[in-house]
Image 1 (cartoon, rainbow, N blue to C red):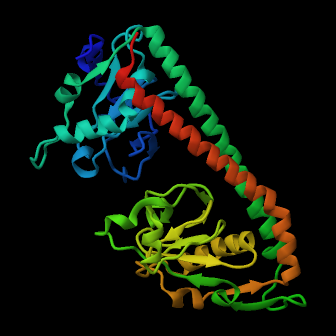
Image 2 (image 1 turned 30 degrees about the vertical axis):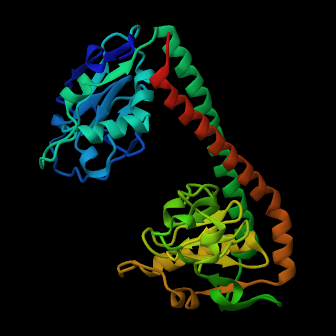
Image 3 (image 1 turned 45 degrees about the vertical axis):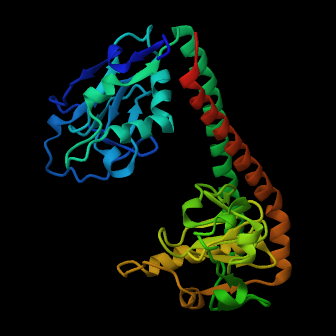
Length: 381
């Protein structure tokens, strides 16, 4: 063990402040991404006085999660407004912030190695898990406080850039949607279409294609250079630029999948049904998705977004476990003249290219952030 490794328990203590005066009403849950989320619990009629109150620089965690999802949701509160968390969640804080920086400790909790360690320490009992005692015994490197703050500042600089890019990406997406709606949705009367416009089935406006998966038992088909899109690769923004799996040229040739060009629209047909991503570059695709292609990819992307919203709305109350070709056949869409589609492509081309640029930049920044987290284990004073 390196000399600067210390048990976490030397630096933290439990906090048990309850909402006895009922002054705090904001209830938050803990996400698998180690962030607060809006609670999904129904608290009508619940005694909120037993819920725990969190203040700035305090942590909350869910010790039962490693058994279920191989992650330990632990969140550090960084704002000043008090909030509530479940009475089942331990709340703790750093004893001396001049000895251990709370944000430095949170960086350690974000490491995938920490989640693997917590999962490993879980026992097989029904109610077993990584508990308070196990957390306190966990060893972490504790360099000088100045070194910790230097590392935290570097991490926060990267995260701030990511956040700014996310805001810009959202504005760019909203701009593209606004232009599309102004040109092709708002004020368009399906009963009285302008000359050159028509109503058609969705599958007459676009080309719908399927995918396939190379033999998973053949090692020569996998871990190659070709991105292999699956529902797990759906991104939070328009573009998908990384995939969990990659296949080889041999795998591509010996399966029913094919290589789809950049800006192909992928729609998930199983699992998370109806999620949409754009291929940031050439990608193959598995059989749990559809590829939507046409001469005007950005127009098709916006058309697909609207079509999926309509399809989902129509499916309310019905079982919607998978998408099949007839679901798309049944969707009627407005098809404007080709000249207008071409004009739209030119109008939004730079928006989409800038979206891809910022999405790619955020991927690189995330990789840099992960590298910084990985280096924590070897940090010296």
